[in-house]
Image (cartoon, rainbow, N blue to C red; front, top):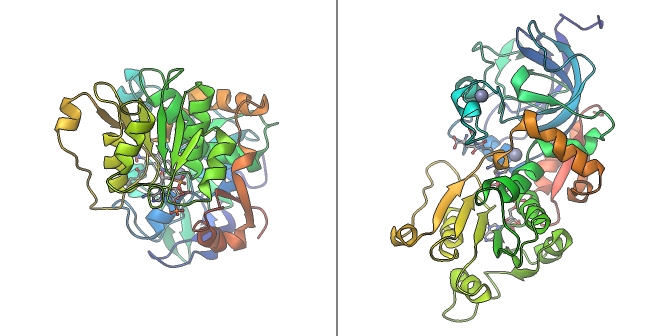
Length: 386
Ligand SMILES: NC(=O)C1=CN([C@@H]2O[C@H](COP(=O)(O)OP(=O)(O)OC[C@H]3O[C@@H](n4cnc5c(N)ncnc54)[C@H](OP(=O)(O)O)[C@@H]3O)[C@@H](O)[C@H]2O)C=CC1
Ligand SMILES: N[C@@H](CCC(=O)N[C@@H](CSC=O)C(=O)NCC(=O)O)C(=O)O
Ligand SMILES: [Zn+2]
Ligand SMILES: [Zn+2]
């Protein structure tokens, strides 16, 4: 038994007291895991745009005070009663899309969305309706079932997966969201079983998610892989991951052209697959309309702010274009993370290349500021260094 097992741990965490304000590094108390829960020492966490989105106050599910973060890797400190899937000392990746393997969703074979704890996760509490975090006598909310901006966090046992301990956690943490999301969207969600060889693909938005779609499209031997981004610096980034073409819609379009018609011209009538990786609802429309008549599919990945809605002429769908979307790329975290880590270890999946910035825990606000720099793809925060 470790010295901390069964006891409350006091550690540092980046606390969001209210929307739109910097995070504050606080001493927080992390209660021991209850039944079917796991307490994890978080070693590394990435910082995702979805964290920024929630912290800005635009997420209808966002509530404060909260500990954000969902791209984390660490080591199991202790487990609650009945936990069999992981044990103390295991290296784990946190899963904001859990996998219980027994609910209607998990058993359907049609989706990676798991219904078992979604309602409480969305309310920022553990499955029993309470929080494991306290600061200054107040309960803090959990976020996305993971809260990786704390040196210790408690998650449901279905919200983490044990992985090869040899894989470096300062990189594999990124498989907890951005890379897996884009790569899975291209290799699992698109079409019946991912993008087919020879398909023409357009990816809107060349951040971590879009570049990961490009990586997946390349793995599937797509023909044209066109990156569409308003940031000219993203051309080089796209090429690094396998993009064959780049279009900047704010600079490269001729008179009378829009991005849809440009992409149709480049692909003999339209793309087989397009992906929105921006979260902009107007871009989502363009991505759909750039699809080939009869079969083109557009996959929405970007998260749009509260109140935003998508629209198009229904005729676009009547004429065979398909609009769909996915969370976590359609990847089932507990069943499929091991394979991604193997691919990374075998040099088949790029991960290190996404890391452009690093911070210690005390630099976490800088990580959010750096997100606005076009050359910031992902910042990894070392949670053990204050
Ligand atoms: N569904 C899911 O499971 C997940 C969804 N997400 C969401 O995916 C989205 C992408 O995430 P991430 O890659 O980290 O984000 P980034 O902000 O790093 O990347 C988005 C890119 O899109 C560019 N962009 C912005 N507006 C346009 C436009 N009008 N046309 C073309 N490009 C544009 C941005 O340029 P600039 O930098 O100049 O603004 C940027 O290069 C976010 O909305 C995020 O919340 C993330 C993870 C999982
Ligand atoms: N809570 C928001 C939507 C936020 C959202 O779409 N989250 C994605 C993951 S984004 C990761 O970086 C997701 O998993 N969605 C599926 C889910 O079940 O939450 C809102 O209410 O609009
Ligand atoms: Zn994310
Ligand atoms: Zn389930």
